[in-house]
Image (tube, rainbow, N blue to C red; front, side):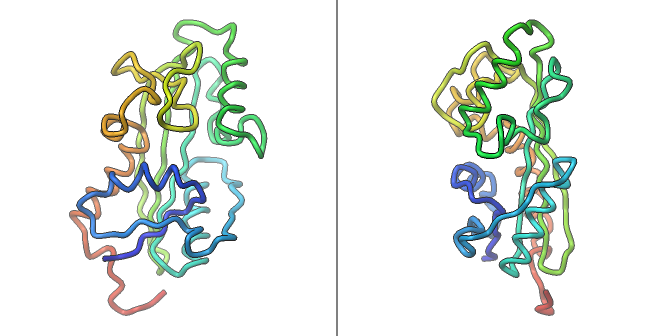
Length: 207
């Protein structure tokens, strides 16, 4: 079994992503389990650039296979904001609640189609030799007037997918993991690794 380092210090992500890789012969661990002081500056201008920065930093820190994702919420009525800055929309030290409250405040006079939005996730897996693969997932929906549900994290309590009338925070994890933007990107990664198991092998031991 290959150790796959997830480039995050967020335990919520490990718990959510692990079931998406069922059937793939990997052990998913957060990079901070190996390198507790691991950090990276997310200075990219796109989700893919930020995901690659995180994945390459994890490879450099551990010498192992690494995977990273970056997700953004793009709201029609805010010209695509918060976008690539979603995790720090309300500031560098913002909590999930801070970000949600600022989003709802910005949308307090916005109605109808302008509350439509989409989550986008870019996932990058990188081998120790630097070879990478990129996968994407998109989920369309709308921003609700107020938070609903206690599951999920981030903007999940205010994002209602087009496919139903519940927010991502109201959905059981098993259902969310079949439809979310992150699920779609990581399931694409899982399909790739199942079809190409040799991709996780480094026969010459090079790094």
